[in-house]
Length: 365
Image 1 (cartoon, rainbow, N blue to C red):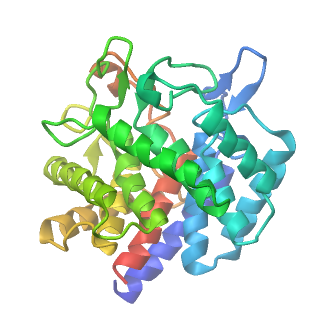
Image 2: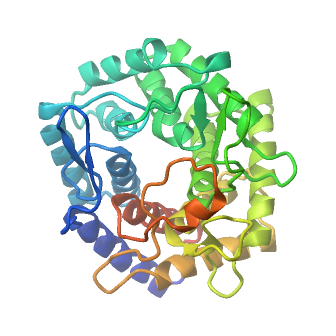
């Protein structure tokens, strides 16, 4: 990366962070009202959902690489305020615990009681599907017998890090098994891309959607998982994970939009809109895979990563908002329903762009 490229990336990162913590739902359109009367602000910064977990992870990675004090301050402030209140445990609300485990390990705070409580909940109380999969329960839905791509990022990675920090090998073994189980049922053998969800109740992939952001959680989480566990090159699980990752990335390279560098929200459907948060996740995962030597430094991979980064940069407004971000998306039985999801600024859009640009600083310096 040339100096100007680094300067540009840092400028955009700081704007992304400012927008991340100041996003507001001015109309209340994206509030989630629960049966018990609670109202979850899925769009604003001061609540507890997977959207915030991904935001915290982006801040963490930026702090790790640059030592940025504001990123650390924002993260510690979020945990201070949210841990005072607490929340319902589910697959999505587990996501902030990944960053909490890193901060605890670095002795930035003492989160032992929280790491223990959430880790034990996943191991013993999180509902399971047939074959012991993590059932993708959310605030409002039990999603009985369903596994989703998202779970790998939202629950399996946090469980892995907690297992490492608290020295609980059983957590690590369970995380490994979950990766294999999700690959078994969610990766499309024909294309190498991933279906959004699978249900053991009827044994099908719902609408057979090869959904963009669902796929990006996989592209991001496999390199992160391999790095977390420091799996050696000769390790059988590592070889299996890498082969699955390569199949997916090879397919992604082929369906990237040539003109914009973005990917469509339904990856194999060019009539669906182009979506920037998935693109940022793909950029992060592909660049990290290159850096970790999980994929070779071939021109097609380098080009896809560069085009994706440029596509992300082109969709960041002067105020730091990432455009072309789809709202939170459930598993649908119909492809057309994915195309109807609204586009709006969201914390995970900001943070996926933050992750991508932060990895860009490392990979192409």
